[in-house]
Structure formats: C-alpha cells, structure tokens
Image (cartoon, rainbow, N blue to C red; front, side, top):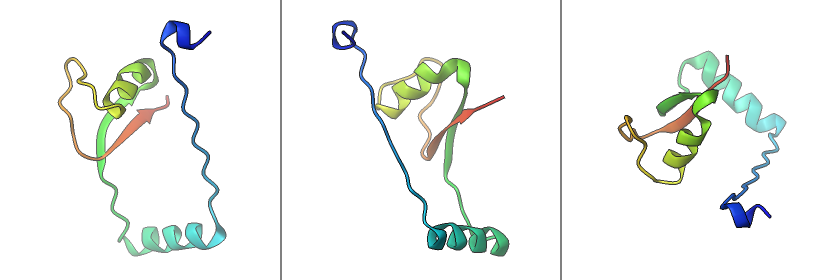
Length: 73
C-alpha cells in the first residue's frame, strides 16, 4: 500500500560498543572531536530534511556539507 502512495521507508540500526563510546568520550574530553554539521531542520520540516538527504533541492535552503540535523524541541 505504501508503494501506491510513493512512500518509501528506510531503517537504520546502530549498535554502539563500549570501546567506541569510550573513544568518543575521550575525544570530547580532549576537545578533538570535530562534527561537520550541515543544515538544521525543526521536526516540523522533517520532509524537507529527507529531501536534502536524498539529494533533492530544498526550497529556500542552500545545500551545506555536513550532517543533516533534526532539532527536537
């Protein structure tokens, strides 16, 4: 039914390890963790964020390099 309406779903599951989390914590403590942040979207604009993620132009937004961020209020 979703296909009939042009809806596609993607599922991503991450399983962090103790070693990986410890490495991130160490980088935060050292101030060496660098995050490449792109556009920030409020949850009300999740569809636009998805468009950008899929490489489509988003009206009123310039494509920025970096991670797309959803802001949860």
